[in-house]
Length: 67
Image 1 (cartoon, one colour):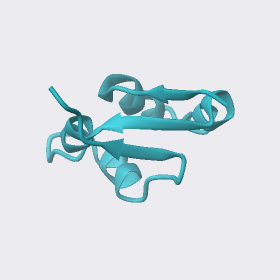
Image 2 (cartoon, one colour):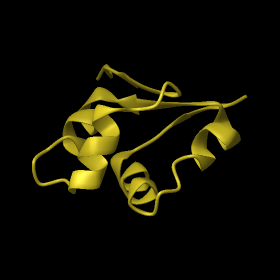
Image 3 (cartoon, one colour):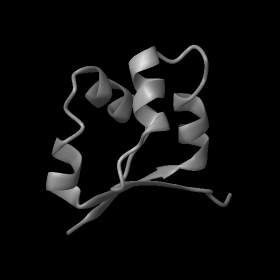
Image 4 (cartoon, rainbow, N blue to C red):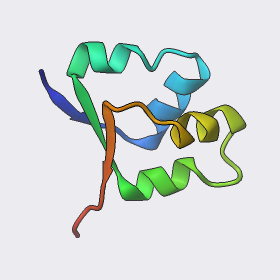
């Protein structure tokens, strides 16, 4: 299986349309930069996205990025 690195926009909208289950089927696992995790958990982010992120699936991991 492939590993994919996701950004906030795509994850945000997949959560809103309840289609995140397609990601592990296509890629196996998804890595998200820690900065994107912080952005998705911001108070101005929609509640469904923040709730989904708080109970994130096992196939999603976040990692610190190096400059």
